[in-house]
Length: 208
Image (tube, rainbow, N blue to C red; front, side, top):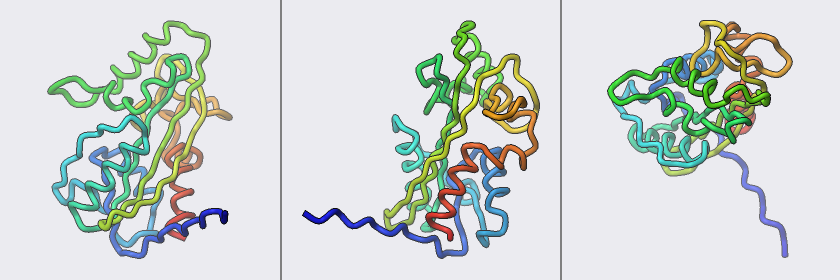
């Protein structure tokens, strides 16, 4: 029996890519990563497209839900990221629920509260290992999609340090550094972080 032929990834050939996010920090980071590689980088909010319910139980499922919803609604290729922080001492939590931990009904996201929750639940556990995951999905209106995943390994620190970045950045120290992501410039963070790793993989797969 002959092995199945590996499908060649589809290349992005359009002049506009819609980012399926309403997170300004994430959009800013992706715009910095793309630079002038895409003629026009729009956001789902530019088209009035609401974020669909993230009902998946994995990063790839949630990224796919978002990318396909935006591609279908706009008729244009869409890029979605689903990312989160996984803490070893918390059995991988908050994981896909990283954003949910920062939410309370009727209030804006509060990552200060979410970071405090991580600290409280760790309860002095000596295992500080953690990693960030970023899953990128590029979806086309016809249903085709391509996926990649990027990782950044490091450890949890307390109290939070730095006012740069967003989300859990102030309590995450990447391996090989003594600073948190919250203490790094965007260029320094984008050189090694999980989204940058996934971005490089996606660029090689669909934009080269």
